[in-house]
Image (cartoon, rainbow, N blue to C red; front, top):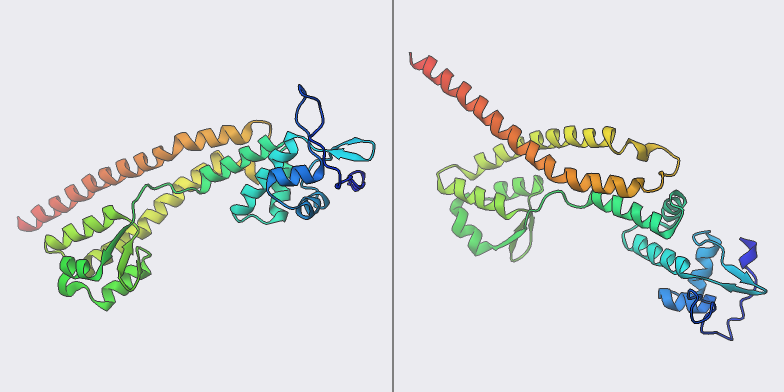
Length: 263
């Protein structure tokens, strides 16, 4: 991008080009200030070809709203943990800041939580009141191993209030905590398998286009984002329905076996 390496008269900042009725334009220092970065960082982004070329007027480079939008997209991607190399690939996949923003929206639709579980924190006194002598080191270690709790000096934080409430209710019904945790581990394994089936369906039928090295067609990222938004609740509906039907089958089969043995 040698055409924008011309000195840009940074000592004499103007209020912008384009007239009162034209679109706002910025010199390099103005653009950096508007984006909340230094001119050094701005030049670094130019050298990495993260910005499109500016409009040249003699020896002065003018930047527009598209450049400012691009810088804001870069800042958002950096906050999300992307490297500059990864950002360059994303930008290469979109023709404009809006195209990159669409890719960001698609990423969010894919990786944002698919559950709406609310964490709950309990003190050690509350835990002892709920679990009594079943609050053992072994049961605590098993809960940690399953990834459901984190332990602090003050108590624990459980990833799901609903699961915690269900666990406490089972204990009150006389089911030992160790047995609940054993069933929980098995259920988690089966849940992971069900999730893999559904993830594979989405990956192969909807997101296969992302494996292609070519840029996405215009509007495709936004279209996929809308599809995922509609499909997310369907995953839980399918899992809930399948689990209920499976319970029906297994309970009926178990009851028939019990009757057979009593005859």
